[in-house]
Image (tube, rainbow, N blue to C red; front, side):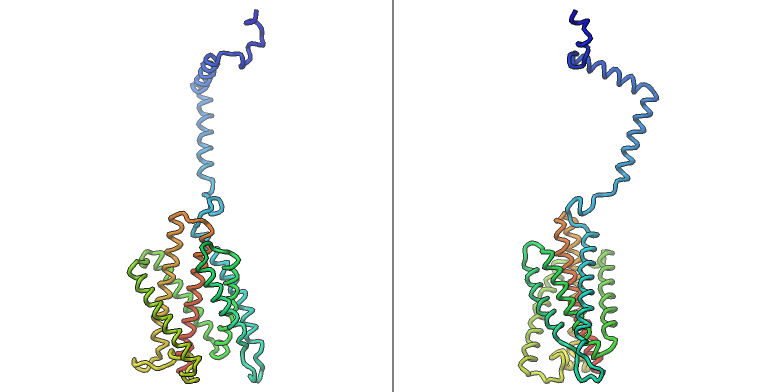
Length: 301
């Protein structure tokens, strides 16, 4: 009687083996049916097409460093720099009168230089990148770049455009050579670069000390850089400046290599800020050096 009771026909009361066999038989029967087979094939095709149509996971999804994300971080920092540079430019020239009795204001230049140097040291020695400090560095450097650019433009009209175009050209050529694989960072070249950097830092410090102590005549605006060399009287600043531009270009190669290595090794996404910070430091260094070379050349004419 119990077996005739419809309640015992529910799946919970069925023999699992029997139920599985029944389902398997039904499924195999469905798959043998051309209609069901075509339906299953269409579903599988749709699933595969959907996987191909799904966009690849970006840096936000993977929380890993990517070239695109680092580029946008770099662009954002330079946008901050340019915006504040406009303020520094206007501030610097705000004290200039029509009769030229009052010259440019040096405050933006000095504030930006000191603040930028302090923040650069803090960011360099931090173990983890700090976005607010990096953005603040870009702001102070914008004040410095805007101030020093306005000062030199006031003294030598047109020099800022020349320096900007030269800087863009050097960065563009370096990036193109690196992207093509024709220029790469090497251990030997990096050692030479570090030795040259230390030598240039010592020379710059000595030059500043001689200028502050009035050992160098006041007419030599750039100190030892303005002194004529033994090579046809070309100022030392031009000769040294050419080598410094090459050093800055190699520093860019190191920055690009750091981005490439970070992406390849799956570095955390926040390390893109460190790479963007390094690129900004190098580009500003390059721009200031080119600006000085042009000022020395035009000052001697």
